[in-house]
Image (cartoon, rainbow, N blue to C red):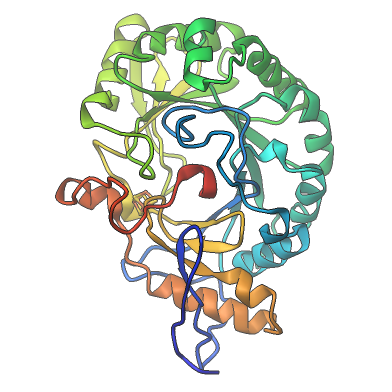
Length: 374
Ligand code: SF4
């Protein structure tokens, strides 16, 4: 097979046709990239659509009624997603997270969950199968997702105050419906549940303590609230450093209300730094992509809605796996191509952020978060 890289003219993001190496790269589960990082986590975006218009992800000025979302036939089918996920599992992936856009907008998503739940690691273990959602459809879908084999969910919720929340989601969506979704997920056993709050200075930083109070008092230690630094993902959200509230400030603020103690990571590569409430009412996490980059342990790959493989949340170029899936390549060839891509990976954007020019959209276009998930 030729080893030529063919840049594809893509209407959305640049992607190269992956090379199939002359020597097969066996699926040993022991792949590592140029920085010695293994491949353990695959995030799969199942739709580029969302019913929210959060300013940090899909600002309404850009993603308006004229915006052309991907046509259905360009999306990977459930069979294509499952085939790809199987190849990644053979290469060492242990966790799959379904994302979007809003993944619950993908029709019959529970069918995909059921197909993915059949996959196993090389040791015969089931994968850690999870999903990140804005919670808006969760009350309706929680039982079907659980029945299909989903293990747990992460729900995005940026405020408890209904006015602040409606303003942030810019779709006039009430907080009560998301809370009902969290309640339903808890009831059917989609846990441990994590709730992610993106903190923006001057927008929702007053919600930090009320959010902590709510989840401590309502759920004890059963729900883990995580505070995420506002990141410069994509090129459309107009990110500025002065809008970032460092995680150290979040911890200091919470510590005054509810004293905290640092605890160890659950596993190497965990994105959140963990803290427990000293009074035993559970734990919180902080994700500090901006002020404390964690690229050195990053073991995540991302598969876009239309089958492009991205190696970093801040990538400007993907690898067009769909082109291989829709040709007559064998599993072994596609697995070797994935292996070669991972072996060549050197991405560490967050560690280099301070040395890079801000992305204004004029240069190579950084991938948007709604297209590859967070
Ligand atoms: S910036 Fe890229 S390499 Fe670094 S942790 Fe985030 S996704 Fe991983």
